[in-house]
Amino acid sequence: MSYFSIAGMQLALPAHNNLDILEQKTINTCKLFPWINMVVFGELAICGPGIHHSEAISGIIELRLQELAKNLGIWLIPGSYYEKADGFIYNCTPVINPDGEIVARYRKIYPFLPYEKGVANGLNFITFDVPNIGRFGVSICYDMWIPESIRALVYEGAEVIIHPTMTGTVDRELELCLARSHAITNQCFFFDINNAGDLGNGQSIVVGPDGDIIFQAGEGEQVIPLEIDLNRVRRSRERGVLGLGQPLKSFRDNPIHYPQYHGRSAHFDMLGYLQVPAKKHK
Image 1 (cartoon, one colour):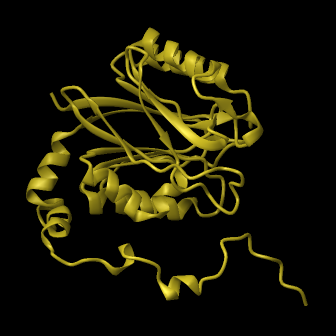
Image 2 (image 1 turned 135 degrees about the vertical axis):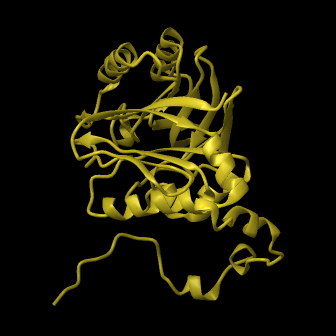
């Protein structure tokens, strides 16, 4: 079987304390669309962006999310929330299966520095298998601006990228371009699910492995239930994007060693510090 159904939850949310809302919205969505296999929230949808909302691993939030997934029999990618572990704070999402088990935890590798202050870098790429369906990868928001991060997931076999986002800024249009580019160059499905309301400007996008826009939302609240066929990924990777370019095979077969992966660059060092731009004085 290669068909799988995902509901992207682009919800208009306040800036904190949203777990009750998300639970009820998920229950309602699964009643309305009982064929849904997976539900995905936007980044930081549960508690909002403040790191003072951080919770220790296996805390009450995680336990309630596990119970929700088990009761509904769904895969759940609950956006993300700030997690305290080993003296650090991470932007983390658990991957919860229909039995309510956490099969993986992804910690955002590229926090939105210098703005997402106090958040540590995750160190591991996460993929997981949905039995008899295929392999999925998880990334969060600013990760998509570093193309190597998405290629790493595909290198590990990901056919679908689940990408919770929290964007309310003028660069949302650029992120739509990035989502489409990642789907094309990695020949995969790309689910970029943003928040609305106080936590984002919506415009979630789902892109197919040939670069086709399967759906793009507006700026307000919208539930996005879609069925995808993972055989489209396999066919694209076999025959090429639109039957033409085969970028993954080309990347695999070329013997070149990229210089950017071997040590520091003097040119990159000249870029200066990663910091908020200062106001220019007259």
